[in-house]
Image (cartoon, rainbow, N blue to C red; front, top):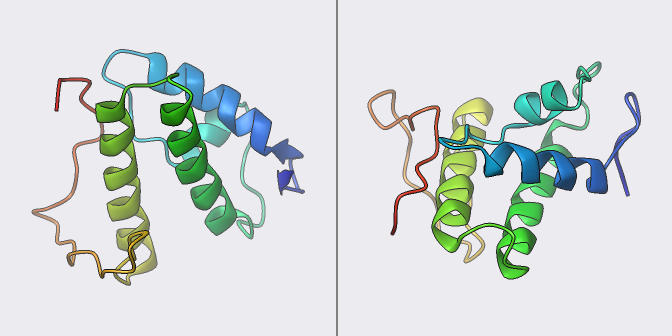
Length: 119
């Protein structure tokens, strides 16, 4: 599936980038901007940003189920990506259980790196 038609980035391109990004020690939060930079691309119109976030979230979940990343790393990536997404949109994000996420303040902002430490 094409995620960004401006730069021709597919969901499989995103998955490959996530494998490399999340495989690094002290992996950064896999934001769309980071994934695009990793692929040597730039967001042009940003119309794909919400689809890119959803794709990243779903790919992280699928990679955990396949055993490609640890559950702890997957949980950390998902929670920080949700907080990041909520901060960028200015609205609370919703979890998969449809419970409102906590309001994010500048004091609550996640560190820019994910911890691979045990849960």
